[in-house]
Length: 610
Image (cartoon, rainbow, N blue to C red; front, side, top):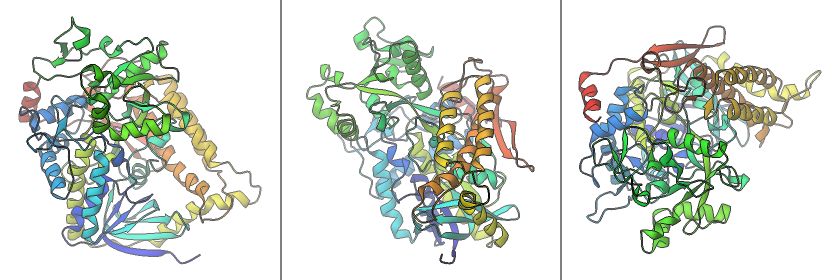
């Protein structure tokens, strides 16, 4: 094999979705050298899956919207355990980031007077999501890539990072390998930004593709960073359920935002059965018009299908468990009904939801303009991630290490509102890149310890040795991954119990022992079995973090629903976040930390918004 390649950068960005691209663009804008590493091809990121829109209080459709309302909605959605400073920065800066994206070439849908059009979305008081049909994320990635190529960023595609390198307490680079040939690459950098996305592949049913194995979370954890809020996994209410080959693929909330309704096998619109107290029907006596809801005493119309994602997902699970599900284990999502309200509804649906129309037509042979879709909850997003400082996005415990997008944590608290992910990655991705560049400018490059490099390489190559070594009786990586996904889906899923999560931790321990015996045949070139074996350590790490954090939080809040603790506990758990960190003996250490008190001016905003 060829010698290891070594690359020198001021800033290394790991992950090339929206957050990573925005961070890289910002870091490079000051003339610094920036390396961008992505596990797959550039452009294949879950930002593309965020179809419904980007949340920003532009007030183009409803002039009552402003950053204060957006801040309040975000905090309410996160059940008030969010990092309030992040939520404040996000709400204030999102409009400028969207306008900046437009200036870079993003083409948004328009109002009649030429402004950026905005639509309703779950948990948002006013129409707030700027969109491009149902392809908003794709347009964002296109725009960021087109802008980024002019910044001199050095892109490394199909490269997987296996460990971060440290010089004392600070990071100084990373060890990686290219997935095609299996050759190692050493990256030497003054600052590192993690933007690797989520952990969905730890679960059996997920909207996440194969890359999303918690790489950034695990890299940070093993480097000494803290992970926060890992118990909060968002199960998107609507993923495809049929045919089996596409189970879990996302069905955008934009379908419900454009008027789609959820019905059970009896044809009943079941979301009316469980309306939170702060929602009051303005037309309760007329079921046909019952989709018009007023939030508190405000004129904010909202269909019950656009309640927060955790609420809608639990309502769907209830219908399925009680025998009112669809033939393939979901419920029905019907947008075709709007023909009763809108003339030329077929053209309207195709124009507003082109991706959804083609997705169901090609994958399930369903015409959504005339038929209902079968949908069910799918593991979609993790609110938890690297604990970072709000203004800079730098790890609270590892200097020079930054995290943003789904890999960073704090802004979403117990539950993320739809559309906030896209504005989050713009606002906080920009901040991560800006402060990583600042750190790089103020600190020299740390020295690389070659023993760390050699340890990482030996660990990565061990599965080949176990396959053919003395007394070899190797395990298969795919079987262990499958067992882990079954365990997490069944025991740490939408509805949780303490005894089941204890079982899950026991299973994870056994699976980790089995993972230490994995053997891989063949060689490093074009070897997906080897890649899966290396991903497993990340999956096991984040799965344990989720299970331990969920077991510790003895209440139901946001995306965590405990059947054995169905109520909130505001006196204890409403005032703390759970944090995990790697102990000196290698075990996972968990502690609860108090949430800093919110400034009076922000508290007043929340009170004013009801």
